[in-house]
Length: 237
Image 1 (tube, rainbow, N blue to C red):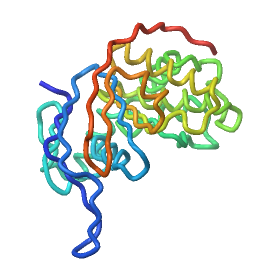
Image 2: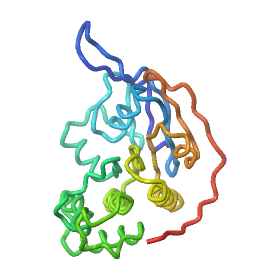
Image 3: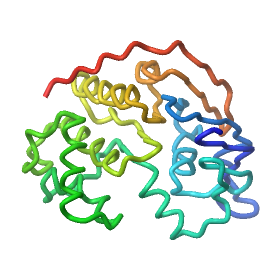
Image 4: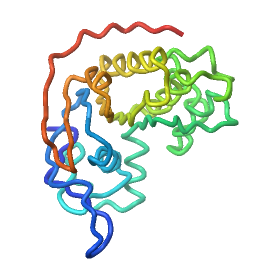
């Protein structure tokens, strides 16, 4: 059974004569443990697809099955719960709370999930260990480099042990060295068994994935599987 099963999904915006199609009959599956890149130019539908995959938006037509179950009949509260428990988001702009220390930024999803305080801290520290950021626990985001902030954002994304990690242009605001470190972090998570979907318009980023899906004008125009990479789990702090 696929982790994600997208069947003839379309998404339009507007009404009547102002309807704008963002996705057109998109059909694909993602297996547990895949590292998939979604590519395409601006306006191709990448962000719309990402929002649907992460339960931030709903298709206008078609169906989306997550772990074999349709999300079509779920209300907003059920979708929010599913999103918090099963999906970790990594965004280009980090979205860290500016006046909150690193540890407490990572703890936040566990607060929403109702996890007890002692367990929250243990899991947050564990996630920060995974991304090599335990030396910055008490720093606020303004005291971190861009690459460090993104690694904290990744720690927050994985703290709930999600089935799916969605990364939207995660190196877009980083220099080359910091971007490489973030990509190495994602590769290590993939090597540990995480399912990762990376949205990007850059070929160099997409080449880190084992599969590349290309969108154009809201349609999938190619779906290329690549040879699995040898991943070296090495970090620099």
